[in-house]
Amino acid sequence: MYRRQCTQQLEFSDFYLPFSGHLDPENRWIQLTRLVPWQLAEEIYHEDLCEDSGAPIVPARTALGALLVKERLGLTDRETVEAIQENPYLQFFIGLEEFTPDKPFDASLMVDFRKRFGEEGMRRIALASVPQSETSGEGDQPSSADAPPDRAAHRASDSAEQPNRGQLIVDATCAPADIRYPTDVSLLNEAREKTDALIDSLHEPLVGQQPRPRTYRVKARRQFVAFVRQKKPGRNKIRQAKRQQLGCLQRNLQAIDRLLVHPGALPLARFSRRQYKDLLVCRELYRQQQQMYDQCTQRVDDRIVSIHQPHVRPIKRGKAGRDTEFGAKLSASVVDGFAFVDRLSWDNYNESQDLIGQIERYQERFGFYPESVHVDQIYRTRENRAYCQQRGIRMSGPPLGRPPHTVSREAKRQAAADEAIRNQVEGKFGQAKRRFGLGRVMAKLAGTSTAQILLTFLMMNLERALQLLFFVLVWLAPRWLTTVPRHSPRHHQPDQRRLSPA
Figure 1 (tube, rainbow, N blue to C red):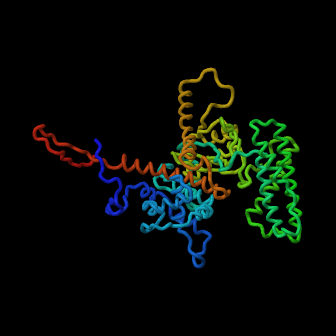
Figure 2: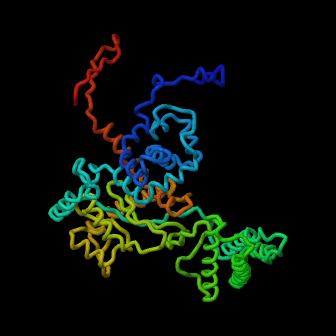
Figure 3: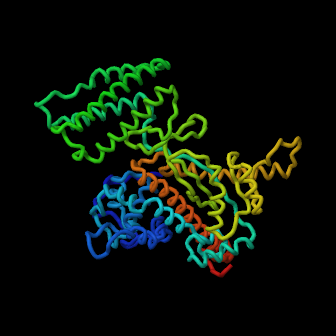
C-alpha cells in the first residue's frame, strides 16, 4: 500500500534529529575511531616540528582522519573537505569537539598531510593498526618490531624453539599511476611544446630588441596531427614522425642554451621549480629517445614515460590484455586477512628475491616462522625452496623435476587447498583496486604517491579489523536464552521473555 504525502518538501525546522541530538554510538565511523592508532600518528606527525615557535598546524588526528575518509569514500581532496563539513560523524572522526558548518581546513593541505606522514610513517601506522591477537594468537602481546630491543632479541632467540604457526601468502602487483598511455611520438611532441614555452619565457625581456629564435612550432604541430590521424601507421611512418619531433626538440634545446648565456635574457635563477624540472626532464627525454632511435631499439634504462611524473616506470607484468603497466611495483604479504606492503619500488624487479625477507619479517612481527608459504610459480626457486626446507616451512606448489605419472588423491586435495588459500592475496589486490584507489593512483609526486598506496593498505586493514570487531560483538558476546511461556489460543498474551545466561 502506498500512502500519498501531502507535502513533498519538509521545512528545515520540522526535520527530526534522532538520539536527542547526540551521535549514534553504533555508527561505523564511531566504531572505526577505536581502531586507529591516533597516539602513534601524533608522534609521527610532530617528529620534525618545534613546540615553542612557529604557527600552529592542523592536528595529527585531523590530518590522518581526513586521509582515511578520502580513501574509504573514494573522494577527491575537495570533496573530502566538503563531506567533512556536512557530516557530524566525520567531524567526530577527525577529532573535532563539536559540529561546525565551517571547513576544517583547506583542500590544498591534503598534499601536505601525505608528505608529513610519508612512507615510513604510513608503514608504522599500518603495522600498529593490526590487532596482534588475531595474527600471533598470543593475546595482546606486541610484535618484536614494536617491542623494546632487549625484549625483541629475547623473542627472536625463542622463535627457534617455537613451532611454526600460521600461513603466509605472498604476491606482487602494480599500482598504475594517473598518466595517459605513453608513446614516443606523443612524448616528444609534449616535450617540444614545453620547450617552446620555456623559450617564450627566456626571450620575454628581449622582446623588441631581437627576434625570437625560430622553432617552426606550427609546422611541427601539423606534422604531429597528420601522424596522429593515421589509424595504423607502419614502422617507417612511426620512425619518420620520431625523426621529425627529435629534430624540432633538438632545435629548441639549442635555442634554450643560447638564451641562457645571453646577458639580456631571463636568467635561469628566475625559473620556477616546475619550469626547471620540465627543462631537466625534457633534456633527459631527448637523450633517451635519440639513443633508442640511433640503436633501433625500444628499451633504455630508467625510461621516462611521463613528463609530469618522471618517476613512473613501465612495469612488465605479463597479464592478459595489459602486459605493461605504468606505476609502482609492490610486494605484499597477507596474514589472517591483513595485508602488509613489504617492498615498494618505482623500478621493475624480480619479486622472487623478496620471499626470504618477507618470511624473516613475519618472524619479527609474530615471533615464529609460518607453517606454510603460499606463492605462485615465480617464487618457487631453488634458493627459496632450500630456505623453507631448512626452517621446516612447507611451500605450496609441485616439487621440482619432472611431474610424476600418477598423483595421489591427497596431493590433489592439498594442491587445491593451497591454491584456494593463495587466492586471498588476489582478492586483496582486487579489493584495493576496485574498492579503493590502488587501481589508479591520483597523487602526482613520488612521495605522496607512495604514501597514498600505503594508505590504501592501512584502510583495508582497518576494514578487516572492523569486521572482526563486529564478529566479536555479534557472535562471541554472551548469549541469553529466551523462553516463551505457553498460552492457550483463546487467552493469547504478548510473549513474556525471561533472560538467563546461556
